[in-house]
Length: 235
Image 1: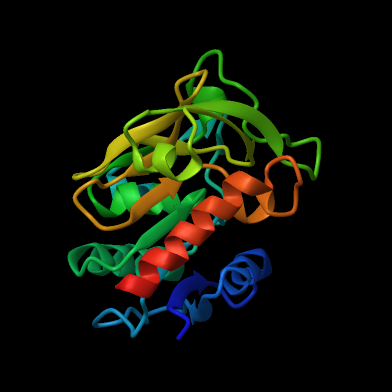
Image 2 (image 1 turned 120 degrees about the vertical axis):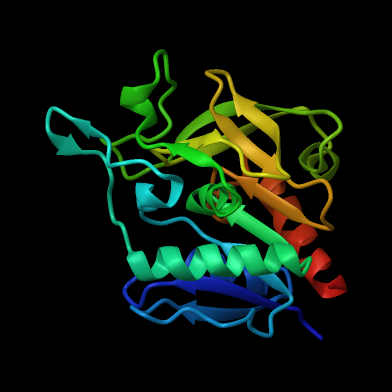
C-alpha cells in the first residue's frame, strides 16, 4: 500500500510539481487545504508530511517585526491560515515521529516550529550573498552546496558537494531545537537541516521537486524523494 503524504496548500496555490513527485515515487498525496480559523486538533491520518515552498512566514512567529528597506517591507505572500496549519502539523509530526520533508519555505517552517528564526531578506541583510533568487528570470538560480559528510543528506546522495537549484529570498538564521545544519552554500546560507534523533526529518532550501525535471540535477532530487517515501512507508 502506498504511504499517504500530507501536503498543505492554499486553494489558489499550485502544488502540481510536489504531488507529481509524490506519485512518481509511489506515495499517495493528500492535500490539506489551509482555511482561516481552521487548525486541526490532531495530526491527520498521514504517513509522512511534506512542507512545500510558497510565501513567507509572518515574522511574528519568530518574535520579529517586518523588515523594511527604504520603507518597503521585504515580506511577501503571508498566509496566516497556512502558517498556523503548517506550524501545527510540523510540531505534531515531530512529536509522533512521522517523517517530515521540508522544501524551501518548508525548511523555514521546520525551524520556526521548533523555536528558530529566519533572515527575512538575505540579499539585503547579508553581505557577499550569492544569487539565490533571480528576479529577472523565471528560471531558478543555481549554485553549489557543501554537505556534512556524516549527515543523512550525505548518506542519501553519496556526496559531500552538490549542485542545486535556488529560488528563495529568505533562509534559516537560527536553527530550531533538535536540528543540526548539514549543508551550506559558499556564502554560508543554510541549505539543509536535519533532526538526527528522528527516523526521517530533513529540510532543504532548494527545490528537489523541480530538480526532477532537469537531467543534470534529477538524480539528487530523486534520491531525496525516494528516501522520504520509503521512510513514510515504514512509519
